Length: 41
Figure 1 (tube, rainbow, N blue to C red):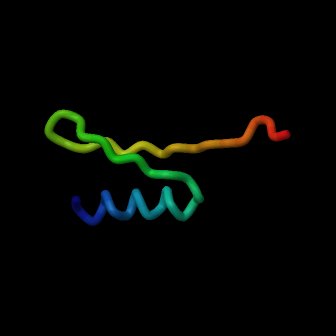
Figure 2 (tube, rainbow, N blue to C red; figure 1 turned 180 degrees about the vertical axis):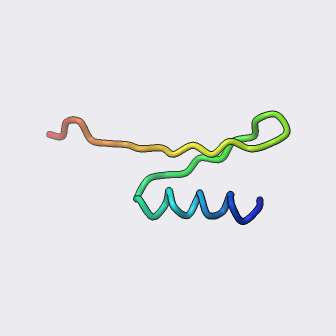
């Protein structure tokens, strides 16, 4: 991974979300995973 990729992942983690890295073709895909609680009992 290059420096730009690491920077993107670090930015996602700073916002409190999860970063998911997947292989896509010859490169990689970085997804920002946001989870929110809709209902709690």
